[in-house]
Amino acid sequence: MNLMGRWFEAARQYLPADVAVWDAHTHTGENDPDGVRGTAEGLLGKLGETHHTGAVVMTNRDPGGYREANDRILAEAAGSSGRLIPFLRVDPRLGGEALAEVERCLEAGHRGIKLHPRSEQFVLSDPTVRQVAELAAERGVPVLVHAGRGIPSLGEDAARLCDGVDGLHVVLAHAAISDLSWLGPAVGDHPGLYFDTAWWDVTDLLALFAWVPPGRILYASDTPYGHPALAFTLTMRVAASARYNSSQLRALFGGSLLRLLEGQEGEELGRAPGDDFVSGDPGLLRVHASLHGAIVRAFARDDPTEEVSLARLGCRVPEGAHHASVYRAIAATLDHIDLANGARRDIVRPLIVAATSALTPDVGVPEI
Image (cartoon, rainbow, N blue to C red; front, top):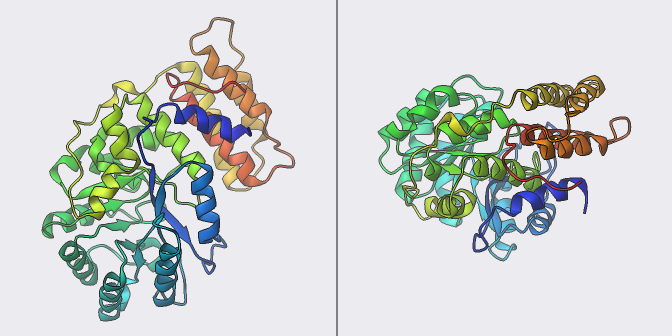
């Protein structure tokens, strides 16, 4: 078993045996200007390798427009034996044309709507967005909105949209990092808002799980930008740190998504756990700081060697030190990374898992 596989299997030990895992956010497409490519065959292969039952799928960005891309997504879902759930994508700047495309796609069988305010350069207060939301509520389908990097604040508009359209369910992608600091603690006042976990930074995920009730969080990977094995490992380590019970895990890893697809609210599964479960081990905080710096450098295609070396030195602790097994697992993970010759994903993904384990030290780690 490879390095990432060991971390993934260690995380899977916390999943109740009867839980069918559904990924709430994946993509396919060949035309995104950012160069990221994804096929239905590749997506289904990754879902199979990681024991996922299925996933929501939508097209990535397509400068040529979304009509053909939406038809492709529907065909991919039709050929997946029920494993792919199709979401349509539209550009609200097109006004009536966008609304007609929403109606066409929902009639054809799409089960949700994706809006990307970064790619299409719009705001959620756009009147067409309100009309799209009204169509979604009328048809009982959720709206998934990019709420990650590269955008100004959209939280107030998202909350206002949910509050103003009866029956609307909006899922803010990427842990809503653009607005999580105020929207997370206030989400109880906005019953239509949900969040997905398609993000890599454990500090954001810890805040998400600390502040947002369990029934409002959906597991997601953002494949092919992410990967199900990585996303599952991160999400489960944080959920296990937050001491999610079996009902909460069942909702997180698919149950809440399936309810939204049926036009239902997520289950009431208790309050957010608050900040007490977040580790404050000073030694592991030091290791995490170095690893975070290494990840940022690696994402920027700079050399992370110095930061990785500092993290590795930070793992040299006395025998019998608190969380000694976590230090050993992080050190062994770093020793397996080929910084000189490895592909960027083969460097970044183990660094992310190591950084996550540093802040979730009470969750079991693999023997490496």
